Length: 85
Image 1 (cartoon, helix red, strand yellow):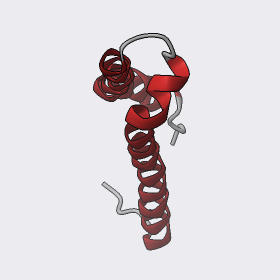
Image 2 (cartoon, helix red, strand yellow):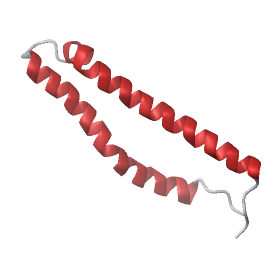
Image 3 (cartoon, one colour):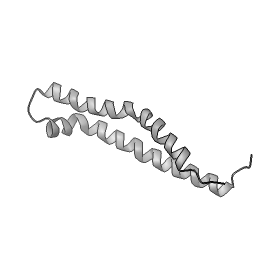
Image 4 (cartoon, one colour):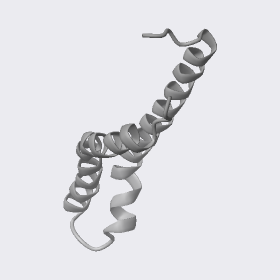
């Protein structure tokens, strides 16, 4: 197996670090704002406790389905997106 060039390895590392940082920052922001703003914005009528639970429920569903999306779209990315050598 051929070793990747040092520049390519550095580029892949920085790119994956950048993408993961943006993804986790997005979830951090949603988790922070979910209890303060989104419960009143998306569920204006109702008990504040229930609307907060609904808002965090949407956050939990998105967080828990990430691995499923990674499996499905990772498969397609690996099979269809790879360059032929």
